[in-house]
Amino acid sequence: MRGRRRVGKSRLVEEFVERAEVPYLFFTASAQPTVAAELALFVEEAAASTLSGAQILREQQPQTWDAALTLLAAALPSDRPSVVVLDEMPYLVAGDPGFEGTLQKVFDRELSRRPVLLICVGSDLAMMEALNDYGRPFHQRATEMVIPPLSPADVSDMLGLSAADAFDAYLVSGGLPLILDEWPTGASVHEYLTDAVRDPTSALLVSGERALAAEFPPQSQAGLVLRAIGSGERTFSLISRAAGDLPQASLNRALRLLTQKRAVEVTVPLSTKLSRETRYAVADPYLRFWLSFLGPHLSEIERGRGDLTLDRIDRSWTSWRGRAIEPVVREALRRLPSDHLPAEAATIGGYWTRTNDPEIDIVGADRAPVARSISFVGSVKWQENRPFDAHDLGRLLLHRSQLPGADESVPVVAVSRSGTAVDGIRVLSAEDLLTAYRN
Image (tube, rainbow, N blue to C red; front, side, top):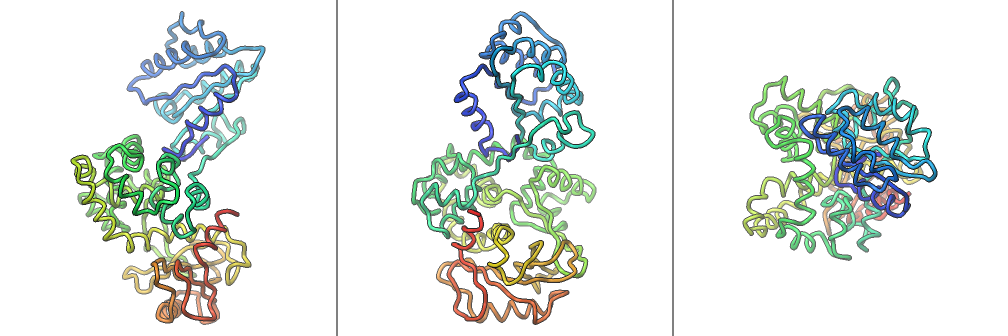
């Protein structure tokens, strides 16, 4: 089972084992400095578990994972089902490179012969995906389960918000249940932030700090680079400058790590011409918001000046939201049935140049990163009371003429929070996008 940090994986499993009403062990690894320290915690948890043979582990002090897992197998009941949960499994694999092979051996020889459900949970998405790869010990032995954040449609249903307001709430919360659980029903973003930003213990503030501390400490190179990207820098040179003029090799390593861990998305312009104008963005919507507005100002919030942070958000909200919504819109378009779009497209991205002239929010094409043909182009306008108008259409048509592979026959689409003031163009509303997430 894998999913981003703070998405609710452990809580979901905890609810499952409690409702199952069967003996179980729930062990959470904690990245101890030595294998012996992690083993001691595992034995302690196993000895205190509800497994029928838990007393076996109270009398033993295994020195290896092989011995500990073999004892665990002996402690499992043979006449009724049981559950074993290994949470934060990437810590176990990182702490002992042989852990995977050991677990697979004990599973095949001992655990598989008993009515036990083994659940391995982790937040390192790349590592958890790799566990089931060809050549790894657990290849084709495990059933994978992905726990995504709540979608904008889920947010709308949970909070009773309109489509447009639900997308706003999604940009702030990232769909994390802990944050949405403290969000008052029907409250707008401003109403929620007015209270949450002033509370240093709110899930909105704490979740980002804990997630980053677990993966990317502030002084690590990857942590510095992630915070630079979160501050709004998108190109290699500007990220390097914002991170303290890191050497090129160090920045490349940090970006590679962030990309592998799915913390950062790497995008290139989509057209029929190869481009190297690479851009980087924080992958998680919640962390985009946290790194932009909350993380850099925790000290002022902790000293009781959350009002300063709230004012800063209010001043920048419209412009920040206009860019933050773009990847959410593109994902919605990927989910829409083809009859809702001007033309069918196998992939959807954007197009830009080094000077951002032109810059096109939406490009549909037959493949990526270098397309054979362009299906349609589009623009995202997400301001209140600011419909997509003739000026926006003229600008989009001009930029279409500068897009490699596009000509006047390529259809256009507008995605607008406030509708359109022009005729003869396909317009998608917030309600249309929300429908895409429902489907």
